[in-house]
Length: 328
Ligand SMILES: NC(=O)C1=CN([C@@H]2O[C@H](COP(=O)(O)OP(=O)(O)OC[C@H]3O[C@@H](n4cnc5c(N)ncnc54)[C@H](OP(=O)(O)O)[C@@H]3O)[C@@H](O)[C@H]2O)C=CC1
Ligand SMILES: CC(=O)N[C@@H](CCC(=O)OP(=O)(O)O)C(=O)O
Image 1 (tube, rainbow, N blue to C red):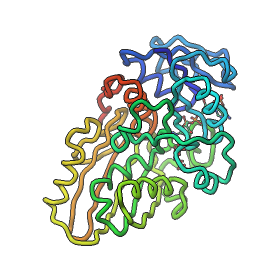
Image 2 (cartoon, protein in one colour):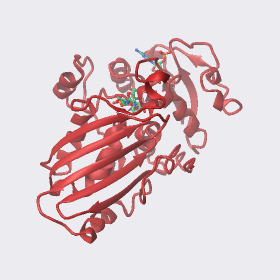
Image 3 (spheres, rainbow, N blue to C red):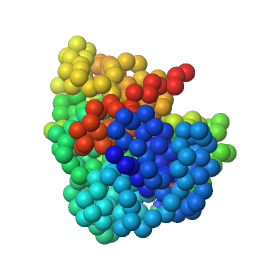
Image 4 (cartoon, rainbow, N blue to C red):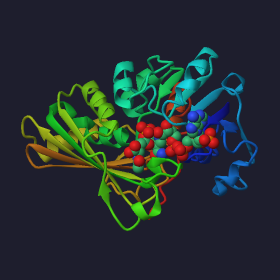
């Protein structure tokens, strides 16, 4: 199956190419960039030297020639491609936020009009596998909502309050220079940002509600001086007390058959470069503390996008995703 990656000069585009090198049924045949057109992919992703000889192209959306497309472009840019690809019958996973929310919620959260809206399944694979199967377009989840929701999902419906406290690596901010990824603002320090109003909170609320939870959800992200990874500590305040054994059973029951969710001590090094989400949980009566770790560029973006493609196309869900973590 021929794959085109739109926005391949960015971090998630590069990781899509890296991971798809080991896919048994998918072959990347086009990598696009507006600014880097004509240059070799390896001029931006030197780690792929000797592994991928493609050069960047910049086709019109009507001329994209592929069986499957990954949109690895910023939100508001993805909608310029999505509707036309759908009309052309080309299957697609969108890594941006453009199709993750209902139209009115998206427009309010992102402060823009959606010019090509349609409803798409939300691609948090472990929770929405049945909707993803057979779909022709998937909205890949945000990186924070992936780790946060997987941390809280087994007990969310028993909670009145969920507080997500996340620490992220800097690659979450993308490749464009900004104050977030400027060395002197990140190295040798640690800080919170968007303390109460990060745009991913609405995705977290949407997923909690989908799990039957009436909990009030809160979220504060922090920027770590590391390149990859998100560690989320979820404080889940229960309506009624539970024992540690009861809580562990809920986690084991939900994740026993989920290859990419492992119950063990979550650390960033323990998942780096891989599609795993490591989760563990402790309960002290009316408070469950669940911690999760993901690589924001893999389970938080490109890896989950490939997992979605595998489910959509009826491939082995693990195809292309068996890279072990790079720990330590
Ligand atoms: N980084 C992360 O951890 C995560 C990112 N995401 C989402 O994935 C998407 C890609 O993220 P990331 O790889 O980090 O971003 P980058 O900023 O690293 O890369 C963005 C890519 O999109 C292209 N691009 C930018 N603007 C436009 C436009 N208007 N039209 C077409 N192409 C454009 C850029 O190339 P050029 O300008 O040359 O065309 C570049 O290839 C974003 O929507 C992001 O929110 C989701 C989860 C996690
Ligand atoms: C460090 C950093 O800036 N992280 C980004 C993560 C966003 C992301 O990657 O998710 P989307 O797909 O929703 O854009 C942020 O906090 O906005």
